[in-house]
Length: 217
Length: 345
Image: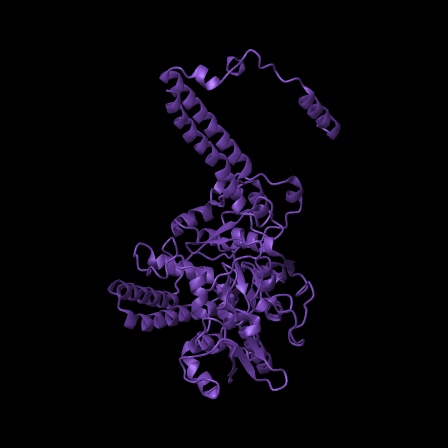
């Protein structure tokens, strides 16, 4: 009788052990959160769900080209905080919030303003590629159609009405990258309202330095 | 409760005398398990009890340790409007046009009704609908920003040119869908080109007529309504075309870097920088500053086509590297670890 009574206890103790410590371990597996109690954010764009999270390897370091510190200036010069007057500069949390609140319901676009050969090597999940040179309004047959897709309306007087235009958030390779500031300046020169443009200065450099995941389109 | 009160309460809690356990028969003397579990029924009851306690402890611990995912923090972060300047006016059809399961008829109804509802709480569109924002944040809310809007296509508006072009888009889509079903991969590429041209023509025409992208979207989606013509590869989750596809059709496919005539010197530096950024290990790929010759160092697991991929983004470009390094390489199949291969431009 006594011998028999040992087994249920053993099993129950095992269950208890896993119930307590197993769950604790699971919880500890995600140590690198985005913000306190914000482990990741799932974003659904065009029916596909992408998860934005950070690298959980506490020993991970960047070994790719973004670990490079020195590039010739010009053209790779350090950019000031503001890309243009009226354009708000944002950081990673705002990028994620923009994706969640405005890109998800299609009232905004996260634009990777780099040339396609940068874009194809990896970008922020949820972004679209419109290279900076496509925003120049000189010698560019595509510019008007891009503006139309972004929600601008060409009036009969050939002026553009931006009252219903989308919110745009632009980024490129990082604080040393000239591509998104160029795009922003061109957009503003065309009349796009500055308060609807956001500049993620950190770009791919800071995005990856913080261990955020990137996707290859 | 202020700090002093908390510490008082804590002191009381920790100094309070624990209730006496003398009355408990289990802990009186000897091996308690032998004394208590004399019958099978008692054993079963006790096991069940311990099991229940185990579950409760487990659940409690889990609730305490595991961070809940969609909690207030996410809501607070996602809801903060310092960046998000979405309007509160839900009646704007531009938003609804792209919300799954909202047909354009309902849009028009809502638009005419001009209902203004708090976006998050009542529309049920936002997963974090029940959020309560902090008053401080509410104060700093920026003025609402209008979202892409459009004039709903009404039959009285005669845009014959546009409707023809829309029909063209729809028929191309249907053709694409048929080919996709037949797995006719050869014709798929030409048809996607046709589709690109068809949508592009529509966008150009609409732009000159003073219409925006949102208008074109509704025009196409209205024409597609009830037809199931959108190929699955292109369809959104709601079976409709979206801004991204529209955008893809208006962007150039070839010579994208030459549009707008950017500075050619700047372009070439960008291109070489992109190669640096794409290299997995920075030290593998070096350009001599004086001679401006580029070298790649062979690593474990490399072969010539992998190096060609790293150098040019094209695995089939390996003969170029082989030719330039003929003296170093015995044949194109063997490379040695640590070899420094010249990469011709």
